[in-house]
Length: 427
Length: 124
Image (cartoon, rainbow over all chains, first blue to last red; front, top):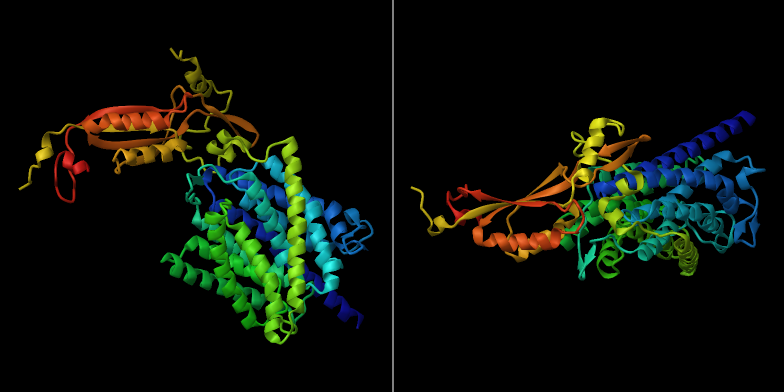
């Protein structure tokens, strides 16, 4: 019997580690979506933001985040022990949770793309992965007050995605739109530079999401994992379909970029309820996610005039709220549509409100503090020339590489060319 | 037989303008207000009096002496040249070195391939 349990433990751990690895790969997806949906002059900057986010997030979550999230609870508000994993031996669980924490922070980078200063963004990542996200996580998953109330968010529609999206909303709002996005009350389109990269990112995220939701079972439970994976697949598919059809109905053509966002909105939508709803329920959640996301993107872009280049606020925020509420409707034991009362729905609402309140105050506060010492966005000149050059001194695509970069700085020929302009008398 | 249009004797000019990429939307709008809807745009790189920039790649600084620019090309009736030049001068100028150049060239003939029309009528 002992060996049976050992095998069981190994299989469970194996599944959780596969989940963690898949969730880590989601960062490649985020990086590609954000790269593809923005302009080529900001590509290196977006990639660096994503790379640094996952690295800072992992380290900081190890040092403080994990303890705040899963340490012994103080009044149901936050954990207090286990900093740097002292006294803890559940390293596997830590790895799985650490890749989640970085996911939450990286959502912001898409919404503030092409204009937020790298250093200020990184300070925000530190606040997010070190404190803001772990506190929310403690409330819901670490034995805090929301979980005591019966709030259900299986894999993080609200814990991860809504928290990230509220941060994204506050940051994008405080920083303001990109230069040229809104001129004289006209909403200008700033097209992304690579739909293929954006599409690749969406497929990678979809793949990673099987680990995000599937791994959140924390065990290779043969009665639960297949349902979770199937729900994830069906909800995303339904959301793509509903977005494609809805954009055809609303804008006369199937909008490719919105349909790609549609897949993500369905995935965010099913994240909260993937273990609690039926397959049909998952399809319904996905169908509604796509339509809500499409309208939300229009609202933020045209009405609210909050510039969100990749649609992170709509996908993760509106999708997250809908996903969390949807559990109240579609939960097969206590949801409203399955003969349950409105009690569960009310608890879900309380959770959403609490998370929005906490995150907006702390993110807003962090941004105000950062603004005291630095600026949130790059200068106008830096934004026009592109963050790739102004922040990193390089470019993602050397379009004219026939002309460029061949000569090192010491080379006499290169020196002469650079001096050429300066040495000519300007009359 | 190819019909000679009445406008055959109107002088045509080609305007080539090298401008900063970021002023293009404003220049484009100004040109449209002057009635210029047809133009070609090319991404180019060039060097002149503007200083090169120093780039950084894998720890090594390198010179980026060629700056990215846009080249606008349009062929118009001679009477439109001055308003177009004024529009470009107004919206493409930042006052710094590197604002670009405008070149005006004579054009011998213009032919619209679809209709075989020749002369200034072909550039509308």
